[in-house]
Amino acid sequence: MQKHNFGAGPCVLPPSVLEEAAAAVRQLPGTGLSVLEISHRSPGFEEVMIGTERLVRELLNVPAGYSVLFLQGGASMQFCMVAMNFLQGSGKTAAYLDAGYFSVKAIKEAQLFGNVHVVASSKEQQYGHIPKGYDIPGDAAYFHCTSNNTIEGTEMFSFPETGVPLICDMSSDIFSRDVDINKFSLIYAGAQKNMGPAGMTLVIVKDALLDSIGHRLPAMLDYRVYRANNSMYNTPPVFAIYAAMLNLKWLKEKGGVQAIAQENLAKAQHLYDEIDRNPLFYASASRADRSLMNVTFRMHDASQDKKFLEFAQNNGMVGIRGYRTVGGFRASLYNGLPFSSVKALTDCMKVYAETGHAYLIPAY
Ligand code: PMP
Image 1: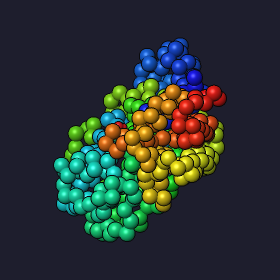
Image 2 (image 1 turned 180 degrees about the vertical axis):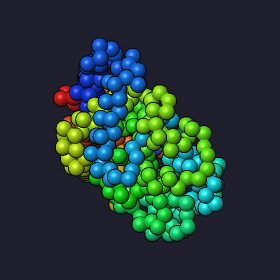
Image 3 (image 1 turned 180 degrees about the horizontal axis):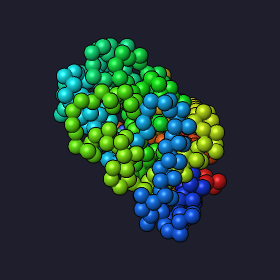
Image 4 (image 1 turned 30 degrees about the vertical axis):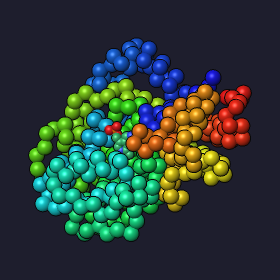
């Protein structure tokens, strides 16, 4: 039976990317070696680094004056690294928006390095919406937000005007839609959703912001060291970067971020329509902030959760159980997930509602 992978990350990647990556594990074209064996200082890999950076710049329309860096440690390492570089030693307070589980983690890490002011929080409403109408102090070191709350299923569709550097965790919606990079001073994202496999973290940072750092930091936690060494101060995650390059090439061939944004919208609309129509289900997030990447939903009768989950799993659905602290269901609709998978899920929901899960759907 075909599997439909709704996992929140690592997640589904296009079959052609997996095939190319698998072939390169056997032999990287032009080298006679496996991609797992080549030196990161070899000309073959230099081309991969340059090619991946070029694709990031082209797909996201990164303006001049920004560096594109490849790091490790996941988006979680960025929680502390941002504060170590731009809060510590600044004598200022950093402003944070608390819109979910990963904002909380970012805030906790930043508090280790200086004062943090939480401008607004939707915690009391179980993070079902993105807070709006808050003030960002004009003397803050920076303002930090999370563009897509992977667990709660909410997404920011506009970003506040800030008089201070805007720093954004875009782990779960980067490359899914067009964003104006000019608005941001730093964007970070773990690769394992729309960029490639786990193991690499993308950072896009304004050079002027890096130039403003006045204190010393451990090399591996200093953005300036990555910039000065083209992200090769130490051994980079060779395979993760190579596979990301293949995935970004795939995205470019599909028509880039604008084209995939249309597909992503159609997928999300199709699923939300079924959630809204089907009497058994309801959407967890408030309508205006519903994420196009992570669709969170529940059953009116939560005692049915286990039965529906089993039914869906028996029909090939993978990864739709909601996050352990949240419950319910979550379907992640990243770039690599085809519309046909979303259709398979809505068919499951329809058949379950109509038959009380009596029948498997033969088509899937
Ligand atoms: N931020 C967001 C929005 C995420 O979705 C995740 C992971 N799912 C993280 C941060 C943490 O990323 P990592 O596991 O790469 O540290």
